[in-house]
Length: 379
Ligand SMILES: NC(=O)c1ccc[n+]([C@@H]2O[C@H](COP(=O)([O-])OP(=O)(O)OC[C@H]3O[C@@H](n4cnc5c(N)ncnc54)[C@H](O)[C@@H]3O)[C@@H](O)[C@H]2O)c1
Ligand SMILES: [Zn+2]
Image (cartoon, rainbow, N blue to C red; front, top):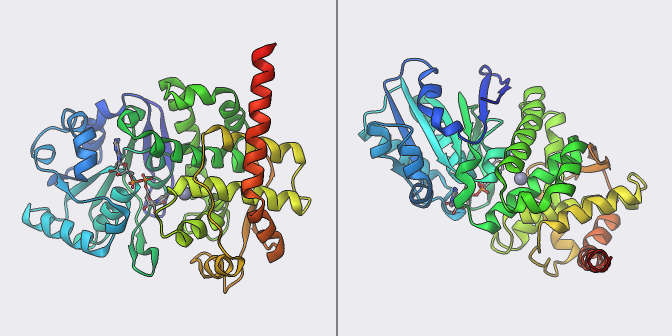
């Protein structure tokens, strides 16, 4: 079964990624060694959709009595970690227990942080059920929760012992959530993998249909990139920053709109267009490459409109981001498709102009694509 090994400070772990990987869950977990019990942490919604598939593969008490918590982003809080820990105690989980997180990024981050802190650490297995979680959040060891002051402000680096990414689990994912994950896949193509980018250009209709072969391929390709990056720089001292392509502005858009207008990937979609415009404006990217990046983002579908946000407000949010260094904002910009550079300072007026140009760029790309499609249909 296709497996990608990730190295981490607490030892290597396997990401098993293929349609049907779930069918081997019990034996893969058993390979982690003796345990005093397996405990599933999930959410009511995920369990409604995926519970039966999981329960048929992980038999016994764990699947009959999963620990469920509400995985709304607004409830990704320390109180959820406390409640999970109390339920683990009541269920008799000791230090030999294995905690299995089944869900999207919220479940993975919260359950991961619970695993990191419960009895000072129990083994963690991630079974991601969203595209974002399969290609991103379940790999790399970042766990944590939000504070009212901001996202993911309390947490730990706590790598899992095993990740099982089965694309079959994505079949019940709402389409908007699915599309949102595709922006993260495009991100990998732009920053590190031209072949993945070209595949997406050619196969987007199949990808949007969730064709199992296309989906399996883009997921394992994305995981391989994330594994390589976090394996080389777990603590984000250098290379890992490259994964923030589209995120500096994406996070600011999410924060400025109260985390209600955009799904995370959608905000990243806009952020990638803006970063592409910045690279173009500073002569760091060829026009045709920029066009292809914007066009591919557009083909995923419509993005929620960017509301009018004052330059000053945006600047204060971007400079206050936890990844800004002493108020200095450093950007990740594409240099060509498949290669990006991080740690780049950009004059603020260029940033603002890129942001202002977003609606126009989107409209023009869509018009251009519609015209091209019409020409194609006639010929
Ligand atoms: N740790 C990291 O490195 C990292 C990286 C990226 C994102 N994140 C975090 O991940 C979170 C976002 O994760 P997400 O995009 O996976 O969203 P999510 O966890 O909020 O899930 C989205 C929605 O889909 C539902 N859902 C999940 N799987 C389903 C399925 N198979 N079928 C039907 N419904 C399903 C969930 O219940 C939820 O309502 C954010 O909190 C973000 O901060 C963490
Ligand atoms: Zn992201």
